[in-house]
Amino acid sequence: MSSIRAVIVLSAVTIAGWCIVQGPAPVAAQGSSGAPYKTEAEWAATLPKDIYPDSRSRLPMIRREDLDEAGKKVYDSHLAEDSESLAGLQGPGGLHLNGSRNRADTGVDRRLQELARLVVAREMDQVFEWTVHEPRALKFHLEPAIIDAIRYRKPLTGVPEKEASIIQLGREIFQKHKVSSDTFARVVKQLGKKNLVDLCDFMGSYATTAILLHTVDVRLPYDRKPLLPVP
Image 1 (tube, rainbow, N blue to C red):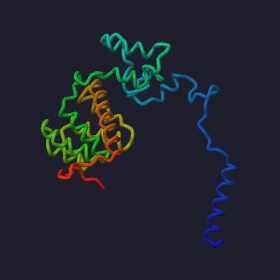
Image 2 (image 1 turned 60 degrees about the vertical axis):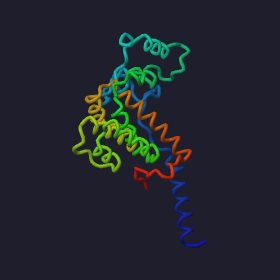
Image 3 (image 1 turned 90 degrees about the vertical axis):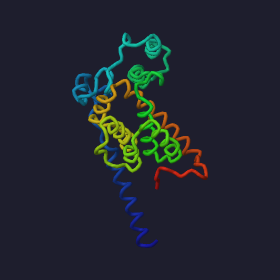
Image 4 (image 1 turned 30 degrees about the horizontal axis):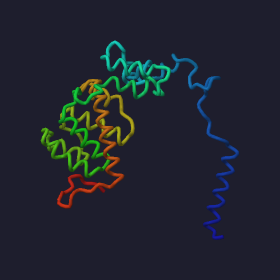
C-alpha cells in the first residue's frame, strides 16, 4: 500500500470511529410531544412580520364569503372529510384561491406574461423557449432594454419598478429557491396579491414547459438563430 493510500484509509477509519463515538448531530430541544415549540403562541412569536399565523404564509387565510360560487365549492372541497388536499386551505389548493383561477380573468397582461416567460427561460437556460418568445414579447411592446437586462442578467438599475420587481422575483425563485420579504412586498405593491398568485402560476407553467423541452432536447430550426446565450 502506498503511503498516500495509507493516509487516506487511516483518515477514513479515524472519521468513522469519531462518528461512532460522537453519535448523530444534536437536534433542537423539543417538547414532550415532539413539537418544536411548546405552544402556538411561542411559535407565532418567532414568525417574520409578513407571515400570518393562521395561514402560516405571507397570504392571509382566504375567506369563503369573498369567493364566487365556483370558488366556494373549491373552498368546501378542501375541508371535506374525503378531501385529497393534504394541507387543506393552508396548502397549495387554498393558496390558489387567492388568484383568479382563470387565465382569462387575470390582471397580469400579455406583456407581463411574456416578460415572466423570458425570466423563466433565462433562469432555466431554455434557448428554444426564449428564441420563440422574444419576438412575441416585442410584439406586446416589452422594451428591448428590458429584454437585454433579462438576457444578460444585468443589474436592474433603470428598469421600471413593476418590471424590475417581477424579474427580481424570478431570479430569487430560481437561483435562491426562496423569496425575500422585500421582493414579495415590491411585487404585491405593483400587482396586488391576486395577480402575484397568477404570476406564480404563469411562471410554474413556463417552468414545466422548459423542463419538457430540456428533457426531449428540442432544437431550433436549422435556419433559426438562437437568441439566448448559454454556456
